[in-house]
Image (tube, rainbow, N blue to C red; front, top):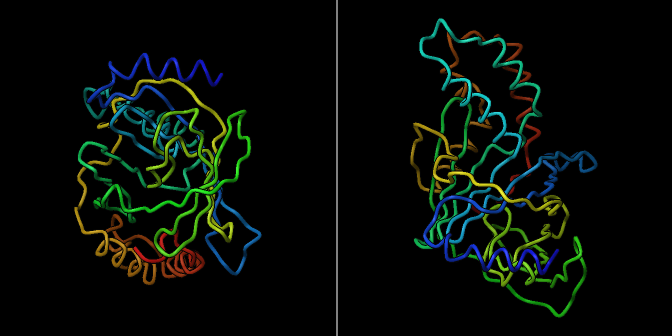
Length: 271
C-alpha cells in the first residue's frame, strides 16, 4: 500500500502543479473535550483533508456531505415553488451533525492559511501565516496504518502537541492548521489529550477546493474574530439578536446560554 501510494503521488505531481483540484482525501477521527469540568465526555467528528499539490482544505466530512445535499438540491430548483424543503431537510438531517464548523484552506504558494467559520447566523474568515509552527523531531518511532511514523512536538496557541508523521506519504500537511513536517501527520494530540486527530482512511477524490467555503463572509483579523467569539459565547443574546422575528423565549435563551457556558475549553488558548 505504501509503495503504491508513493508511485501514484509521483505520477500525479506534475499534473497537480498549481492545481486546486484535490486528488487525495485523508480522513481523520477527531475527538475533543469542550468542558474541562467533565473531561470524561468527549465530542467526536469525522474530518477530511482534501489534498492537492499546492493547496488543501480541512473540514468536517459531515459538514461537507450536508452542504453537498443542499447544493445538489438547489441546482435542480428553477423557482422557489418547485423546491421540496421537507425532502431536503430530511436528507440533510439524516447525516450526522458536524461538531466542527471551521473550513481551513492552506495555500502553500502564498504561504497563507484562511479559516472560514460560523458564529450563530453569520459567516466569518481570517488569515494567518502558514509557517508559524516550529517543530522538534524526536528519534521515536511507531506504526500507524502500516506506515512507519516518527514523533514530532510543537507548541501552538498555548497548547503542547505530540504528532506522528509518515515520510512514506510525501504530503507535508496534516489536520487543522498543522503542516510543515516531512510527511503526512498521521496522529496529533495535545499533551492533556483534550484534542486529538487520528488518520483512519485514505482515498482518492477530485473536489474543487476553492468551492469548499462559506459565502458572504465577514473578514476580520484573527485576534478580532476570537475576541468576538468570546463575547458572543459569554452573552448568546448578542448572537441571536438577528434570529427571525426574535422568536426565542427567555427560557430557551437561558438554556442556550447554559450550554455555551460549558464550552470552556477552546482549541486555541492564545489566538
